[in-house]
Image (cartoon, rainbow, N blue to C red; front, side):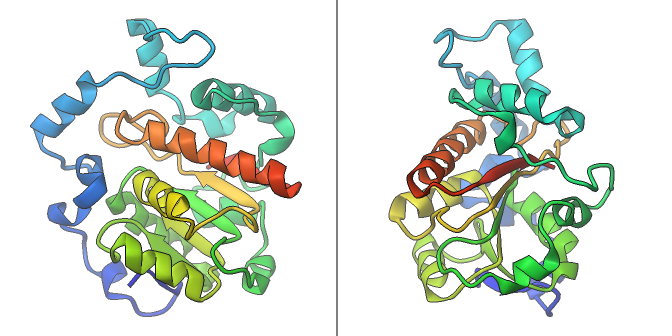
Length: 250
């Protein structure tokens, strides 16, 4: 259902995801979404920054669409500035994780350049994975799961077609998960249900994969607002618990 040992046999990971499998709360996020869905999404307003409170200009929209496309190559300070503008909150360079393997084509290697496999295997906290990866769509989440399979740890699959919100909530409270791969809408729903938190999470990964239209999870109008809200929730819990949580743009 929602979580398995990475590296084990898993029907969902070996079978290709059909177009209808990217439905539910992430319908418009798959690469082969209908033209109508794409047109509707492109007409929606991009996230307005709290600094200005104004609707972005055409130039600002073009810049916003590029958020995440190459951003992982920037410095921690530059990434912090971009995230602060995006989410409308304070972010400092110390909250940004830069991977020792930042130039690797492998997402697994880039994550391993921040948190070791040994530390992942030792994680034993329920309802709060050590590493949380947020991707643009269910289709992309499946690809991420394949990339992370060499870790061979328990992973929560928190996106549509991997069980209902209620089933995933039960799963998150029934055992510890070292990692979670999520879509923004589903993760936000679980956070609001109280089934998922960031109390023991040390790394929040924003997957910077860009779709055919060059949208990332941080620039697609259907996902950006939920991602911004998740960032605020994660940082709020960090301050409350007084423990480090870092964000990585990988």
